[in-house]
Length: 406
Image 1 (spheres, one colour):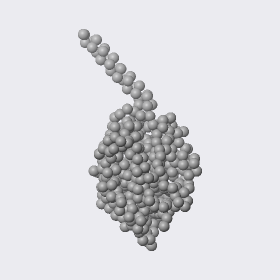
Image 2 (cartoon, helix red, strand yellow):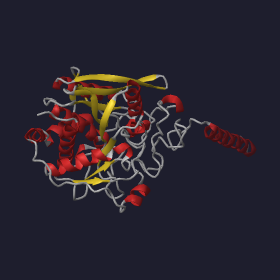
Image 3 (cartoon, one colour):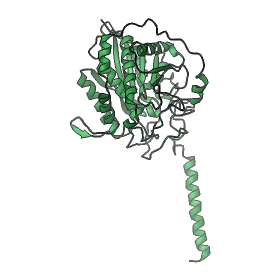
Image 4 (tube, helix red, strand yellow):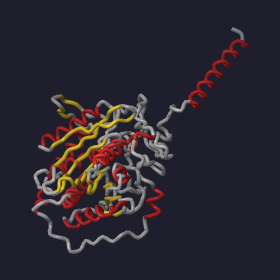
């Protein structure tokens, strides 16, 4: 073959490569999980672009919502300035004055809550965490299986749903799957409920999200342990339920596990929309999202109320006072900023006007979980005594908020 012919062939190959690249750039769906707006119409980013998270390949999934999928009160999940929190906002408000919380004249610890606290132990939570993050196998619906991923598209999410659902059944607590649709496909949240005895129409919600990701939530991630994010919150919700199941509460207590959080708070947006449509009288929402990592001395736990949005500071006060009343080994911080606005499942409830807070690990540059959205988010990286204390604090505050009866 002559040299001119060879050069002509190479030229054609190069031209073909250029044309393919141009076509991909023009494709609005190409790499759409990286930094694109996913349909809320508000300019917010629904992926994890720019957060330094590790990405894993897989088949592209289709849970990208259109603007009309949710109630217009919602703004869409915000990931600007970082994945889980806005560091610029956190720094802006760090030294600003915050409302004083009176921890004087606290009542004596309630013996029933003290007993409930004793049931929250490291072996108990470790077992749940190991199962939900795929460290060990578990018998679910009669089969020995391992939950390797709770990614919204993973087949193993069904195993996680079944595990949590069966847990509530074992406690004798009423439980059901609550369906919602995105782009015509049906997904499920889990709702367990203890009816109130004196004013059952008033509802207190304790929640967390069940799904996980290793940084690329728009694909099928077959391995996504998510021990801190958010198996820790999932287990926290389960433990609050176990601790309070035998007590009479004035208000109805709901335990809700959301899916689709990592794609854009979809499950909680849909659930809060359903509650609004039903006229549900929600007194307060305690959202637990990442309560297991603490890599610094001091046991700091952050409570986010969006600067008292809808009066949500009341819940902050309940949590701070609960930690003080039961002398828990926690430094409870009222962040009182907007660093997590539209970033976890409390947001949808705040959008509808209800009181709601996020309970989380320290959301600062030097205190945040370095394993966030990676395969390193495993149980071995968690501070389990710290997590136990957070669950105990939540039990005490929720029991008070739901009007535990004498």
